Amino acid sequence: MDRIANRRYTNFFLGRGASYVHFYLIVGALFIAQTSAQAQHSQNTSDSLSNASLIQKSKIDFLENINMSLDLRMSFRTYTLRGGDNDYQGRQFENGFTALGISAKIHEKVHVNFRSRFNKTSEVQSLDQLGNNIELANITIQATPRLQVQLGRQSAYFGGYEYSFKAMEVLRYNDIQSNALAYVTGIGTTFNASQEHSVGFQILNSRTVLYSEKYGEDTAPDVREPDWPVELVGNWRGSFFDGKIQTRYSLSFAQEVKDKWISFITLGHKYENNKLKLMYDFDYSSEEIDTKGLATNIIGGEFIAQEVTYVENWLRAEYKFNPKFTGLLTLMTNTTYGKNIASVSSGRDRLRTSYGWIPTLYYRPFKDIDIRLFVAYIGRYFEYSPLAIRDLGVGSYNENEIRFGFIAPLRIL
Image 1 (cartoon, rainbow, N blue to C red):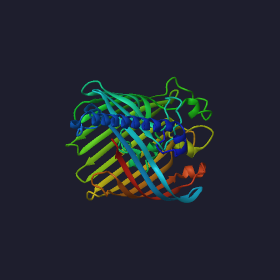
Image 2: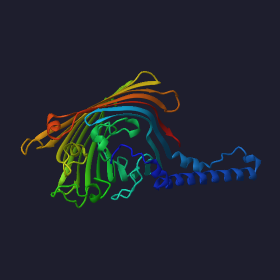
Image 3: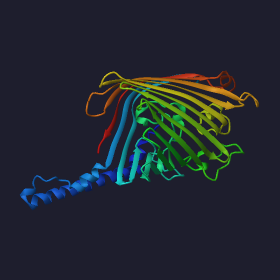
Image 4: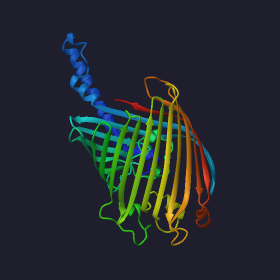
């Protein structure tokens, strides 16, 4: 999975996405027709029913169990890239995030969750047979008062607070999260030990496409297809001091190719009071086969890189000045390592360190609806090690971007 949107809007509306649009239009038309018929029947039956509700109580109760949201983020971007082999600038309007989400209680103990992101490709993934634009398609069963079971395509139970935000809320993810596979198919369980603590466990596919499509001929002779590309994820969420301090920790092991594993640790921490939210994540990913692709791009060569490590830090501070204005600052770093790059016995060699800073100001003009206007600066600097510059032919560079736009998580139903 790549959280960065693939902007092939035409494919969506002319391809599989059209079926979803037709579905919603048909459901809406049937609902309107039915309620109109009921209203006409009420008028014809008796004048005493003229003040009756047009929608039967049973249908009102049903609608109360359905949530439908349309999430939007649009902005105007002006950006530059300087250094390395690149030197360009540009300006454009961009629909960075457009998604329709539906959740519903269809039984006393069963919920269904669905979310389609329109600005991602609708091409069906060969392994789990869903379009990449379908981020969520699952049911949640309340097995016991404390135990939930989730089945279908779902969000991996990774820890950290950067990962907990929808992509609508994040103008730029750090390097691991930008390239991590977040929405996959499998089974997950969550046990609420108390109001303050819960633990979760998942068994998932570790990728959404077949081995031949993702790796093809770009692998070394010792890289082979596994019997099952599987990922195991465990997490713990904690809350302390009446929720002022919270934690989201996770540990996962994934196998995309035979006998080569990816170990991923995330430690997320949050402090919150009436006006301030402060979040810090530490991420560590040790990969016997490079699933993020950053080290492979730096090293180059004929095959996908092996024995790479990613270490990240992410900090986000939100301060609410008043009901209309909120300030936000995000800071992040990523360091990428490769094994035995300088020589056959050089150990873990640093390849690149990236830095990012994103100051943002939100303005909320309306009290009763969550529409936020924002202005933000996104600065990224990519510093390559002397080894990478000397032996791999790369050069450091920086990116600078200013955005003006709006964020609107709109609840339709």
